[in-house]
Image 1 (cartoon, helix red, strand yellow):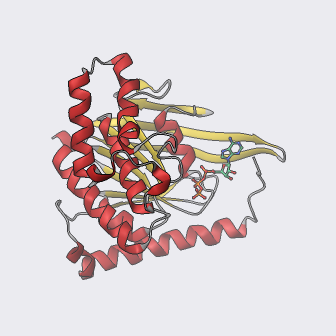
Image 2 (cartoon, helix red, strand yellow):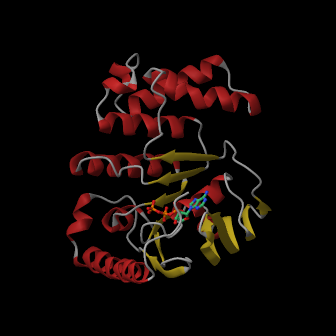
Image 3 (cartoon, helix red, strand yellow):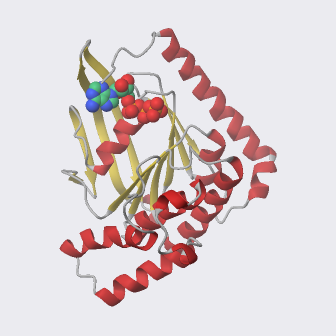
Amino acid sequence: MEQQIERIGFDNVSMDFQTANGPLAVVRDMSFSIRQGDFISLVGPSGCGKTTLMNMAAGFLKPTRGTVTLDGKEIEGPGPDRGVMFQEYGVFPWLTVEQNIAFGLELKANSVKVSAAEKREIVERYLNLMGLADFRKAFPKTLSGGMRQRLALARTYAVQPEFVLMDEPFGALDAQTRSAMHDLLLEILHAEGKTVMLITHSVEEAVYLSNKVLVISARPSQIREVVDIPFPYPRNRSLQETPEFNALRSHIHDSVMREYAAQEAQGKPKATA
Ligand SMILES: Nc1ncnc2c1ncn2[C@@H]1O[C@H](COP(=O)(O)OP(=O)(O)OP(=O)(O)O)[C@@H](O)[C@H]1O
């Protein structure tokens, strides 16, 4: 079964940061697998190390101990196989909408041959898919928040990464736009079959989008719970009205709140770096 193949593996991973107040143990002995086709969400208290874990998968950070692997090989750095989308830095303000989408392709062209015609076709495809075709010459500052987010998604997707790593990508959006982005994302994933790692503070978002939710504990973080989300794809909004959805949501919510309380009890994070 495709679903069972491990693609990204965290094997006994620990991360300590050196801070002005001494070493800070952020991640401790964490092991988990992201399998082909998974949509896996990480939820947990603020500052517990979710971004740190994503940065390791992206290849921006190496663990202090343990290994993070891609198809069994240790991850040594970033690559076009992993598209990363952050909340704030998804788009370049000095490039137009179409230039932003094309940007990743320029980088990719260094490693994989992409012809000019192919590039145009990919840019067109994502302009249309994201409803941005009429804004191709616009600069990001003239777009709404939702449009900018769609642009960021288009840019990440245009490179056609196998993995999409997203850190709170919808955090700044209003509820309606956020909800529309969820459905757009599910639609694209259904069409293109990607493997996704999402960090979110919204338990509802995690349950709606994922097939697996990892509840991360207070620091030094470990996996408190792995919750399988059994709803088949494609999903739609009516799922959120079901008792099964609500039961999972409140279970995960309670679990996260316990970790928030545990982290509060440890005192405020000492690191300011
Ligand atoms: N380069 C660094 N040097 C020192 N400390 C760091 C560094 N990067 C992160 N930290 C600390 O590690 C902890 C975990 O940070 P991280 O950003 O991974 O948490 P998070 O779970 O993503 O938080 P949030 O949900 O608030 O975004 C924090 O206390 C942070 O201050």
